[in-house]
View 1: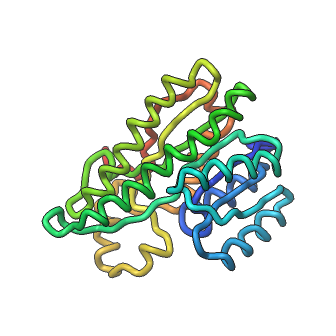
View 2 (view 1 turned 90 degrees about the horizontal axis):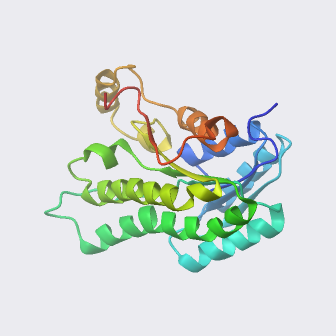
View 3 (view 1 turned 135 degrees about the vertical axis):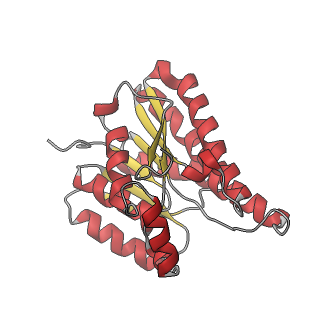
Length: 248
């Protein structure tokens, strides 16, 4: 029996990195997957094909999670196409790093809008169908940076810390409807983005992690499967650090 058999998941920002890893592992576990992307049409088509080949229903939607109306329309379209929304993974996010002295107002606002406001937009869009079903699992992607801060990332840290407070409040509001809201805080995860970094720097980070390696998108995806499945039926309002012991 696959852990997500028959469930439908919305995953935002899924054409690369962590989002793509989650989409693939969810499909392998039997979930039907509706995923969003902002501009990479070709990558979205390829992912759609890859997921459908696993025997589930999968469809990509070009949608801006930071836009309230786009999020509402996405939820309507997915409900019409798939019949239910059982899982929401808010994964879409960006960085615009700079020291506070140099950061522009525009770069602060943009990161808050894409990383935090999108979580509000999508959560608000799916709670009505989830309340009707009397079940649902919402998983929000934060970061260890949201827990401990990081120089040069005031905007990113604020957005990721905000996600934790938001998620706890949702857990309190919707628990009586059997809707769960949890957070995953990834540590140093090796993706296409980190592959462009200086290798000595990356090696230094790996050595500082108790498990002596960076995480993979699959490491995050496996934790998401647990929180999305009925195995975690009595877990809500929690933050799970998936960081190789970085914050220990």
